[in-house]
Length: 242
Image (cartoon, rainbow, N blue to C red; front, top):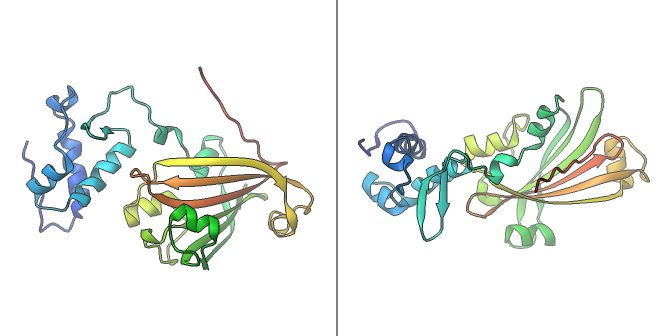
């Protein structure tokens, strides 16, 4: 097959590369285990930047179609490969899988200065302005979770986005930012006055606190997320198999 793209096309270069690689991995030689051309080689052949090629590769690695090993190369994934990205669901996907339609009861967007924890996670200067997204979400009859998300300024979010759309769809489709890995911390606590008022419960009521640290395929931090769940309305289930 011809490995070319149209530099005069209105289709973004990264989208053309992604489509090209999707066709490449259907070829018998790659299906049988051959490694794809490396990023620099493919970039030179197409006359584009290495970052553009990497963006396309990252998308296909995220989808589980490619497997990349540092120092070795990138090849087509075996049909039975099951990645962590495929196992990780967003909150909306989790609820949809449980048959629950989620509603945004309140949505606030603001700019705030990063504190110690956020600055350390994002590796940015203390006090740097970052976007803060607050969402009160739940079933059609009452809210049961309050999310607070902070985003790395590298992404380029403006605050004018329609955050009623799925969050990770916005990041991927509008900003070409793919999220791959989520690390979580879960603990119990008391609501306190502010969270209690937001969730419509007493300040002394128990809540589940879920911290989610989200990274892109390159291991760079994307989102710092805090979730506060009503303990009487949410059960967190972990299934393990040996």
